[in-house]
Length: 631
Image 1: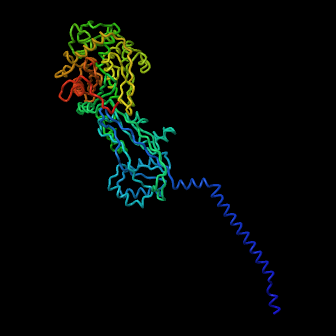
Image 2 (image 1 turned 90 degrees about the vertical axis):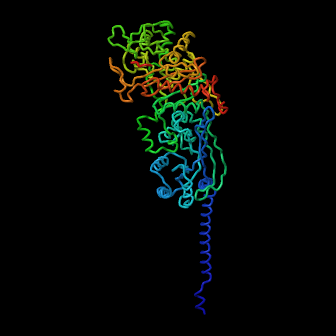
Image 3 (image 1 turned 30 degrees about the vertical axis):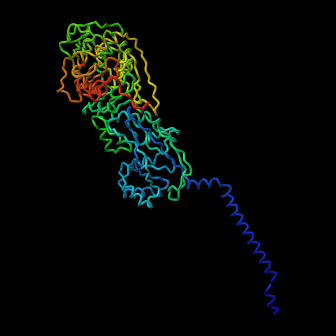
């Protein structure tokens, strides 16, 4: 019994128990302290940061693209609209394996190599996190259904209803209105921080034409919304929203019926025509043929289609009305005749004898008139313009001199951009002594003046410059800046005009009479006189494409079609109180009558009613819009 008591020490066991309890308590308190400290760190110290991260997983900012502004013609006809379309987009941040996801999509619906290349370019561009990048546009209903059925396999893939730009008139306004297209790397790199912010969620921008010139106005301002999403990225609810501001609507001076009549009048021939309202400076029609369908570019043109357009010999992408520079030929003769009158070099009765050629004193070169036997022994200014007498204008150009011709021609818009509200306009060339010295390193020679007197040599002009020159003549010296846009959201643009001319009224009368005689007085455009219900004033012209050697004759049959002369015609009508001016150019048309016939159809469309009767008043604007050849 005594031995058993010695084996059990209660005091010692109590001490051990108390020691163990103390150690356990210390450990427990330490662990609790660590846990409390960790909770404090998470819930207090880093509370704001973790709340932000949580919200980022749950709440996202979505950009709401604005609706692009619409474009109407003067009568309210819609020329550029936005149509609904379903777009397949991918949010990269929500996709675990992008290549695998695209592979699944390719099994479900057709995705071309062009689509993939454009998508890959867009995905590499600078963009906001969680911003959807389009992969394919214009999904069909059955394709949308296939995506919906396989939604569980396609995290990060969205089918969005978007508005896509559409041009109902197709090729008719391709060069004037232009088109929008995907923002490329070069454009994105040029964006300022403000532009980058403004284009968030927007993948297109104006490329050419009015779409580019008025991009800032048409674009609008994007809105934003905060949305709550689930783990798959599906929107559960909208927390708050800032609505986008739509772009402004444009109403043009252009009349779609006149534009169609002008385009159809070319009957497939290459060329350009511009029609200007002489009273406002508004461009009523601007045509460049051949044209193209701008809708091909909106969501990204295929490489095959682009190569076809870009490699075509007919250059359908080239805006001839603004960018093509041609020798104006005899169309500048009325303006040069006016210069002679204004500077006192000639008067209305001054006449020359025309033997059919002209030769400078001491020069062996003989300049031969288009009419071999000449125009008679008494050729005055009126007859010289009506019959396009080259000899008369060689003599006049020599006597006027380069300095006076240059200074006078600039008052009619030659040699400088007109300022029309379409980008990429070219300035043409209205040469001077200084220009030749700087451009060619040579002095100005008398022979250069002779060429200039017939609108040849160094002289180049765009069709819109010739239309502006003709409009300025019709307005007796008042140059009105041409504009395509009439109003922006109902607010009219302020017209710009100036008049540098101090030409006497009787001199204007002489030029008007002479230009009227071109058509109604048996002149070079008498072919379009028959059946006219109004009096029009015009001037024919031809422009050489290839030079003809001294002594040789122009032989159409010996030349390739694209080496034949261009045909030109400028006109304004009616002669009393002119309402519109036009310039028409037919590439390689040879005979100026081809251009004159087109101009006659254009003028008839505007000045005659549906019954073919002359209409004295201009059509109302919709309430929606507050060596020389024969010339």
